[in-house]
Image 1 (cartoon, rainbow, N blue to C red):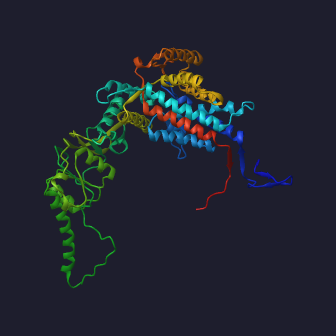
Image 2: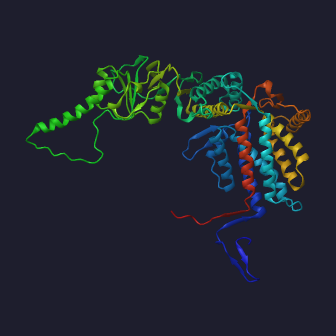
Image 3: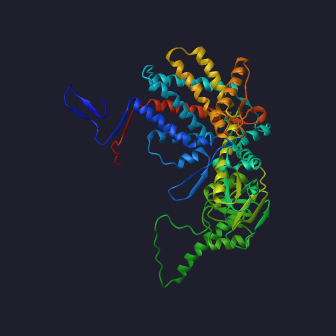
Length: 552
């Protein structure tokens, strides 16, 4: 079947597919896929490493995005080719899984595909894609094995310097690298605050950054004013102006029930006899008594701060203000959970079920502060906060957004190391060591038709140090040849080689001394995702576009 036609016993061609359908088959489809993957990689190739360039993107709403984060760029790019779309999915998967290495994974996947092109184009060798895929899978398994041998173990609590140099390696390639020390401290402090230690059952440490480390961006001020609170803050003012604005060691009560008269779930009509006006007063009295009883239940436990996710009626405000209690209403559920985690309080659903154990006593200071034009409630100096707020200040929204993206990457990397405390040398050192080891292993152990594609994966891994050198503007061939020689020498001597490319100057340096490290989990995920997706794309031999729309 070619071009959607079928020849039936020498008769006229029979059209199987709709005449409007476009179709690419066999080698043509595979070559087109490889070219599409390369095109996507070329968009973000220059954003790899500390000497990376920024990209300016205009989104459909007309707002401008300035970034060199691979995922942020590809998320905004509108592509039509199906393979290009699946490449962009890769960076999203990488971002969700480990939070870093989004540029590397695209560049590496495109290079692995590019290495397959000669095998597919060459009519004489005629290597079938399944042979390529099989060799690639063997190379992947061996690469992951070699990575574990290269990795070094660290103690997250004790090796603070190593942790700091790891986060600096992540931030060094980003826009916020000018405020490196500050950002490193913020990322490390935030992650160690929200990290739950290993449980007795042997589960790995839990670090939920998304839920418990909130980034609050406040335009204005200097970037030097960014900090991690030993507690939480939220953008709310007290419901009544006469409520206290500062309390030391406050007792905090969290509610998710309204402090106002409860309306019925179903619509209710009440008929009152006009001649008996006392009935109407009794009805109002009941409503007031209900709210008063709620306030009595609350004040019985002598809280200093009451926070509810629902509304607070004027009457309840009056009672609470009179008793000298600060009240906040309509707080988001997520913020309320964060306050509970930081202060040790329990969120209560009914006021008549409040117990002493529900009151949060873990906060050292409640204070209202004005930052910029807004009032914020600060609950700080917590004794053992398991949640925190990161305050980001900066000149403009663009700067703040970029710093937040960079900080998220740094926190994700720190989280990866907390959950899996193993590191690898950065600057393309681990990729080059892998490339050399895979080449030697392939020449020695792999025989027959699979050897060439196996060695091609080793060749593809060199793209990371090569791109780093390229973005520095040094002689790529000279640098990579020298680096390859160093790693080959170390491999023959059976020692670990940690030499890589200095991303700022392009010179070759020992990464152990230079202090550039990367988490093992990020590197594993990058190589795994890149090679597996390349295998998947290589197995496509037919692209049919203009297929029937699914109804409903």
